[in-house]
Amino acid sequence: MVDSSYSAVIQQDGQWWIGWIEEIPGVNSQGATREELIKNRREALSEAVELNREDAREAAGASYEEIAIRCHANRKVAVTLRRDEPGTGPHG
Image (cartoon, rainbow, N blue to C red; front, side, top):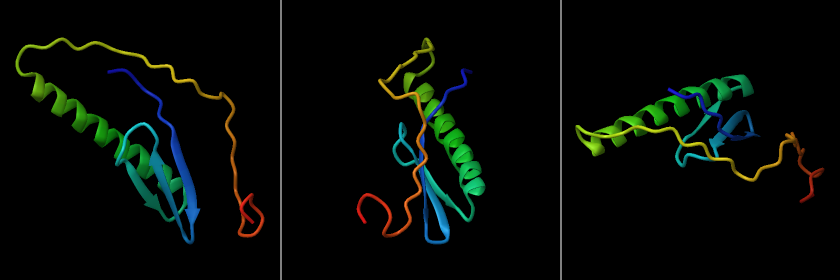
């Protein structure tokens, strides 16, 4: 199995932290803390990837070839952490 990296979009919403995985629709969750959210994201992502893998293998039937494909999206290398407080962000 190949280790992959995915991008998470996270934000604090009231007392909760919520987050989504950009590359896989439906892989989202929440946590009471940022650390809990990240832990929950990893678990949900791992489960989703494994379920997708099982579905693909089942759909292929008894005879299939499994290959690794790498995708390099045009992305910025820098990471920007933006924490806007109400009334201070770009939307005031």
